[in-house]
Length: 126
Image 1 (tube, rainbow, N blue to C red):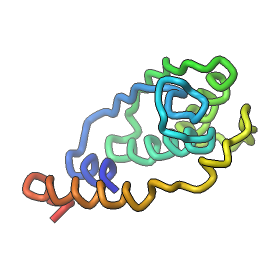
Image 2 (tube, rainbow, N blue to C red; image 1 turned 180 degrees about the vertical axis):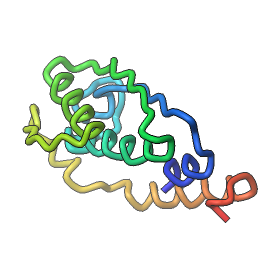
Image 3 (cartoon, one colour; image 1 turned 180 degrees about the horizontal axis):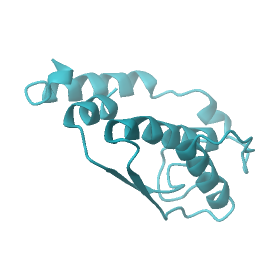
Image 4 (cartoon, helix red, strand yellow; image 1 turned 135 degrees about the horizontal axis):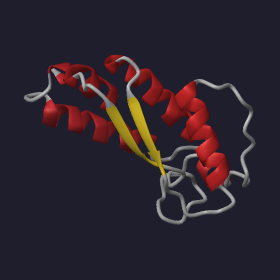
């Protein structure tokens, strides 16, 4: 809702993405709460976005702080990036508190505010 429209308008020549399994719910560094399917989705979105620049994308996968999750998280990211359909089991059970996204309404409000703030700078938000 934010990144893809701005990137499409910006029209980069190449995409360089940095990250790893940090957004996973079991990673102690962040509290983003993604399961491995969410990491795959990140890879899929980057692959989709790379069409803007003829598929030119460099991925610097190199982070993650939970050794039980890291290989599955990286595999999920890579499979999303290359479009490889593979079943990846969640290495750790998803906590029940994450099954329902209680912050969804707040997230929608933040997105709306960001769009309002950027509408003078980006045509995609007018």
